Length: 249
Image: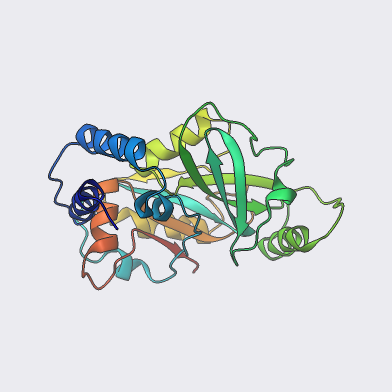
């Protein structure tokens, strides 16, 4: 049975996700610490710490930009073609890694060259990234990464891992990537733009082979930078509830 404190925290969290912050982040963090001390095994923490790899929506530029203010800050990143992977660290230790299908691939990635095994942090950190083959075409990169995750034993192909999102973060996209870089992860290049009209310009540049040439890309990813606006999109009744989208053509 839920305690009053757990119900209160969930109520504050729901309001925050709908763009109606009722208390400061510092006050909310203190409530979470109180609940963790009283009941660390409650449903709230089990739900919050479950490792899930969110899907990346695909669609048209116009659909994604609909409803955004013209000066909304956006980040444009390469859509690297490989295999999506999610990592979970608990108190700094790499505890679990899963593939897109939810398969446990921890044993495959725990010795991976650019995936840290230990981090200088406490609590739970969930990281989303892409396993890919550098210097390959997008199709070949995806095939090599997929074969590696399926292989039972040694693998000779060269692979790399690029981290581009903290799944359970309260930070905006820019700060999340900055944090990942400080922790030792490789992060992708990005382009910041403050006008939604610029997205089509950068999309055209990618189609012409002028953007993100160092990666095996099959598109670009457009992301809303503000965490508050991300949550509003996720939890609202808008026609388009996604805060990031892959544009493939």
